[in-house]
Length: 215
Image (cartoon, rainbow, N blue to C red; front, side, top):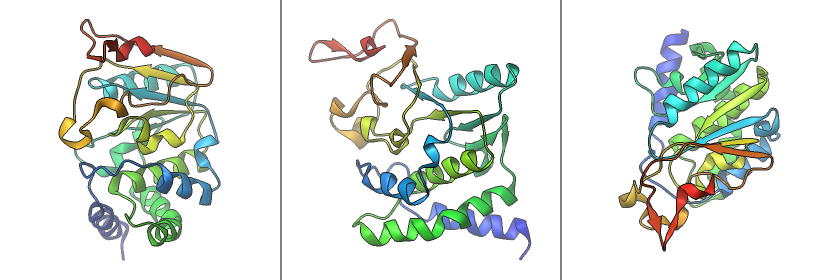
């Protein structure tokens, strides 16, 4: 089978999993996967980008600034526009089809183990997150720019401990999926070393407290 055919097959297998909008708020599956993989999310510093709007733009700008300083970068963002490979980038460019397929085949046995141990199988987004961590550790990169998904403190990207957390403008969103704002904001605060962020003019309030005040 040629690489393009295998790439299409892998993409179909990943997309067949529970979709991004089917939120099962838990970190246990992702934590178990990265543990089986040897904790690749700890291989280098992580800049964790959260917020309601502007996450991907902020992640791309951060990536470009880091590369301009001579650092090798890994970037994980969502959604993709044309190719699923856009979600996992090295030095600003999507990984090749060969690299994408290799990463999937590398983690698949461990994904299957996690699937067998839990009532809910790993989702589309969780599998891609695990692939990204594996690719970044194997490359290796100097720093990872990591965009959160959906689910607040229980978003699966939170298995990584960001040395820097970036908060883009925040508003109440995805209430159909998340129901209660108690899961927001979308990263673990405060991060171990530093927290920086941008703030919207009208930060939403929950029980009288503006979430953006966390930065």
